[in-house]
Image (cartoon, rainbow, N blue to C red; front, side, top):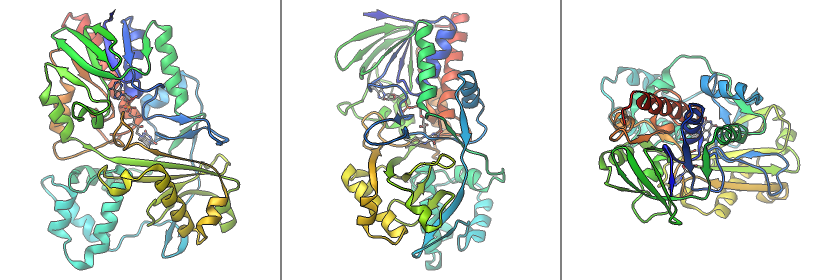
Amino acid sequence: MNQVNTIIIGAGAAGLITAYELTKAGKKVTILEARNRTGGRCHTFSGDDFTIPIELGAEFVHGELPLTLKLLKEANIKYEAVCGDNFQSKNGKIKPSEFFMEHWDEFEKALNEVQEDQTLEQFLQQNFQEEKFAGLRKSIIQFAAGYDTADPKRVSLFSLRDEWLSDHEEETQYRISGGYIQLMDFLADQIKKSGGEIFLSSIVKQVNWQVGSLEVITADNASFTGKKLVLTVPLGVLTLTENEAGAITFNPNIPQQIKAAAEMGFGGIIKILIEFIEPFWEQRGLNNLQFLFSEEKIPTWWTQNPQKNNVLTGWLGGNPQDEIQKLNDGKILKEAIHSLAHIFKADASFIEQKIVSAKVYNWTADPFTRGSYSYATIQTPSARKTLKTPVAQTIYFAGEALFEGEQLGTVEAALVTGAAVAKEIIDAQEYKIY
Ligand SMILES: Cc1cc2nc3c(=O)[nH]c(=O)nc-3n(C[C@H](O)[C@H](O)[C@H](O)COP(=O)(O)OP(=O)(O)OC[C@H]3O[C@@H](n4cnc5c(N)ncnc54)[C@H](O)[C@@H]3O)c2cc1C
């Protein structure tokens, strides 16, 4: 039995920063991580026949994000702005991307007039039911699904309004040299140097707890005891039923918290990485390609610009219940090849012959994620409040879903919530609130 001060479940960004801050403050910390690696949804992969490390999970730093950039500087990790031109493929033609949606002005006007929050679907049904708006409805739903991985039946209209109609300038996005793994490795090294422990391949099954003390049991029956627990597993895992892989049973139960997690939105995502023998898109005039948007089954693609290499990334966001999110990797790769073939008006065999290496990562099917990242529902503000309130000063929650603000669903969100929980624990112990 291992007695520690704080046990953290999950070694993703939130779990690592919590441990980093706690160990820096001299606390005894143990992280239990289900996978055989740290980083969670930050997953830089080197292997197969890829000639560069590829990001299977998080890839971009979405703007001037204070905590992420502070940590990168502290760790002396370089990052670089992404750049290039965006294109769109429509009706068999590729042209520079421009924002155009028929009836957008009417949509924007109606959106500005809404007084009470509702779901996107309710809003579209009430205001844009007529046949002439069919194209608008489809585009708007795709927009919400593609980027926010949001279900129109659940997503909060107000959250989309804040995102879509805010007039802040497009922020520079960055990529971390060597990938997000650099930052995760830095945090893990610092934790170990300060005496913290990270147990990999430790799937937590059960938490027995009472005020100020708890026992955590893993799938291989290892037992860890501590005073406080920080739970950083994704919403998709928190809401699993008892016998599914990754599910955690609480004794006594914490039904209010599990209900709150279920009330928040959690999408689905599949990422497809393909390295080619040459950048064939450049021969078709796309020399400085950054993003390429289309209406294909795998609609969004991008390069590693400004890095010069032959990798394209495909992105398919949506509802975890969508049929395509349930396809096996081989079928998804086939869809990806067909999508590229349509976009570039080529035979699928032309695309296939140029592939050096390909990897499909279906996060929706991953037992320790079960989806993509969170989006706001109408219940999110009250649900978040519930999860941000520690259970009997003993069980704390952190992770991207608990973040309040525009960066919900990002690595920055996970880092900020983890750092905040660490501070809460340090403060509580200083004032002897156990
Ligand atoms: C495909 C994809 C692309 C993304 N792109 C970006 C991007 O470009 N920029 C950005 O900022 N964000 C991006 N995100 C979101 C970002 O990756 C996440 O918001 C962030 O990494 C979440 O960190 P977290 O610590 O909250 O959760 P996680 O990283 O999911 O960490 C939770 C950890 O808990 C572990 N766990 C689960 N169940 C158990 C169990 N029973 N026992 C023990 N451990 C368990 C998991 O294995 C995991 O390591 C992307 C996400 C995905 C999936």
